[in-house]
Length: 248
Image (cartoon, rainbow, N blue to C red; front, side, top):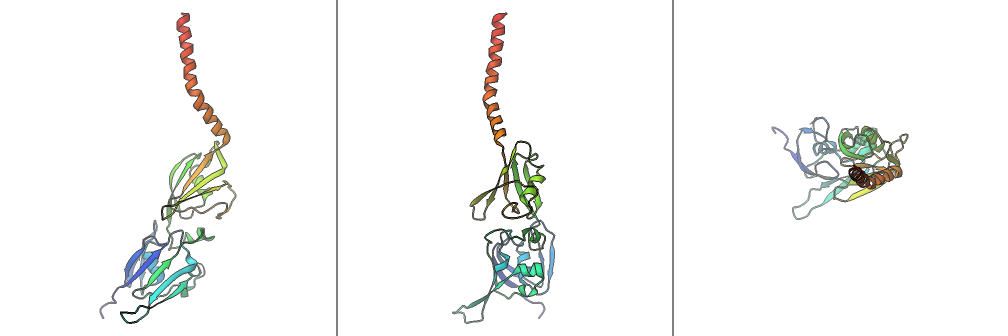
């Protein structure tokens, strides 16, 4: 044997680039925004995920399913599957959760119901995207699109946009998230500078999120008065000029 032939595996679900991949004993993987990783040796589950661009921030790492086809006749297909806990691998170093792959294997990564509590820690591992792009708009000093480290909490994103200005209603900050299927989700939060990262008070952001810092009631009232008074101001100036001409 000159060299081992490639094996083909399928990755579906919450990975950067789902699809079918050929893996050899020498590969290069790269997550979004991260460095290229040289992969060598017999391919494992982690190697395949890295080649597919890494996991998304919605990935359920506690329930990764590895499906393997059993040797049977051509007319009869049979499979077995195992559930892997990749959190135990990346947080505790449990290598049994990273088995070698066989030709025809399928790796399924489902979507987590909510962002894992360990999201900020997981953002540093080599399975996750390293950078995300988010929009921070509204009553901040430097609104616009920002490049931030993955899983940056909402409060830190607002601070990266220059912080909330004096017109902001810090009790009404909206987070809009677009899902892969095109649906949108909106949640409201209070901007608490002392809050640690959590799904309830200071959620880790995902790529494509938009944060809107709304105006306070006082700012709304001031804007409404300006809108009404500007046309009237012009009329008053015209009336004053008309009177001066008539007087002269």
